[in-house]
Length: 414
Image (tube, rainbow, N blue to C red; front, side, top):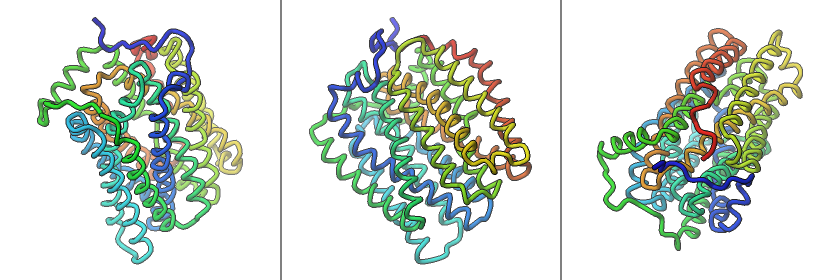
């Protein structure tokens, strides 16, 4: 018996079609859009004040690494708590803490000139909350959609994150003041908590009444995933891509090249690419030969990376902003599509009784890999230059494609 297979249908169906009878899910996504907007705006604010305080790529690199480590610390424990107690109270707490972090950061920026270590601590707390929120959102959205549409729900969740990032970037760019941006982020986080409480009141979220709260919870998770080969191989592919696909390449490139005057355009290009990738995934859904689609998209990402690296010679891209934005949009879109497809497959294949632990564990592992990637990126770009880093990424991508056997092990369908 193959417990991890749950076919959503053989015909071509978009995520929107699969979820057309789930109005409460879309209400939930609408509320969570505010949360994504606050994350997008705060990311721009952090880039601005970290660069102003430190003066080079070390600042944003340090904040990113610390946030990732905070998320890695809380991943599995948060997942255990979600499986045991359900997502409602945990998610409400996450947004309450996030509001306090945004307000606190804004206060420090406005009233004092604190040591950079203060922002290191706040970034660590923010990373912890993101990691706690991920399994809570996964469990909540799974309870609001049909069983055969769990993957479609994750696709819409990823689309909501990218749309929120675009809105947040535009808001931060229009305000132009990191402290003011963060105050607005705090208000949005508080509003999400209130709206989610109203939406979730009639919903009975599933939980494991006698779920373990000790190491037995982790051992049970690993044993269950080990005995589900398609889920296991998809998880492995997801984690490999989290390392070889960078999260701070655009920011590090901007700081390394001293291109702060075009930072807004380039960052906006990145979030537009993410939105295009997620929107494309929403319309294609989890149908067709998924292994072939993964291979095609990831190879396209590698080709774009190589072309972009070649165009960095003599700072050609810096002087041709439109071409730089196009390269960023393509790279962001292709990488987002490939990572989103794997995340949706995992959400569809995950059993309900380990969904929190699996999502929490994955979030923690992803953030550790992101931290490792940021360390590598910051070191290479500060000691050498961005082009060396992009060539390193291209080589790692080719190695990953070989190690994963062209994604042939993730299965052709869910």
